[in-house]
Length: 284
Image (tube, rainbow, N blue to C red; front, side, top):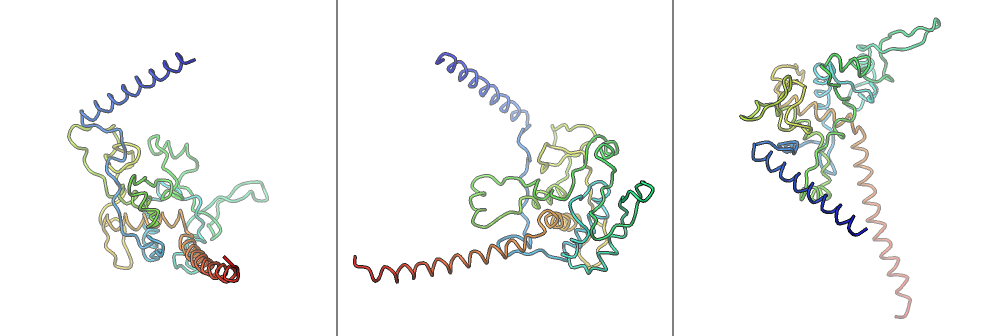
C-alpha cells in the first residue's frame, strides 16, 4: 500500500513538473494561459457601496443601447416588460414599449399558435427561435442570454482585493468586466495569433479573442437627454442596465440590510444594559 501511494505521489509530482514546464515554455513564447489577460477596469458606479442606488437615467440609456444594438443577437428571457417601471417609466409607457414586440401565444380555438403584441406581463422575446437557430446564424457561437450576465460573468479580483471587498461591500465585478470587455477591443500584439473570424480582446475571460465583433462605436445610438454618444458612455450605460437586469432588487436589499444592522446594534445595546441591571443585584 505504501509503495502504491509513493508511486502515485511520484506520478503526480512528475505531472506537476511537466505542467509547470509547459507554462514556462508558453510564457517564454509570449503566451499566457491565464484569462482575462488584463484585469477589468474599476468604474465608479452609482450603485456601488452599501448606500449606492441605480441611476434611472443611465438605466434608460442602457435599455436603449440594448434594444437598438444588443437585442439583435442576445436574448433577455428572464426580464419582464413590467419590470421597466423600476426605471422610471409609467404604466402607459411600459405598455407602449411592450407593444413594439410580438410574442407567440396560443393555442387558439383551432389549436394553432399565433403571434400577438406583447404586454407588460410578457418577457423580452429572443431574437432567434431556439439555440440551434442562433448558432446557425452566428457561425456556430450561441450568444449568451443577458438576463443574469452581469452576475454570471463576474471576474474574481484576487488577493488581497477580495479581503477588502468584504468590508467595502464591493460587488461590481460583473459590470466592471462587461464595461472593460466592450471598450477593450484592440489589435492583437505582435507574435500573437488568434483564430480567423475572432477579435482580440485582452479582457475576455475565456481566451485572447472572441467571436463577437466590436458591437459599439461612437455615434451608434442617439440619446435624447444630451449624454455623450461615445463608446465609453454606451458601454457604461448598458453595463449598468445589465446589472439592474441581473439584480433589480439591489436597492431594496441594501435598505433591508441597513435596517437589520441598525436593529442589531440597538438590540445589542439593550442586551448590555439588561445584563448590567440583572447582575447589579447579584453579589460577586
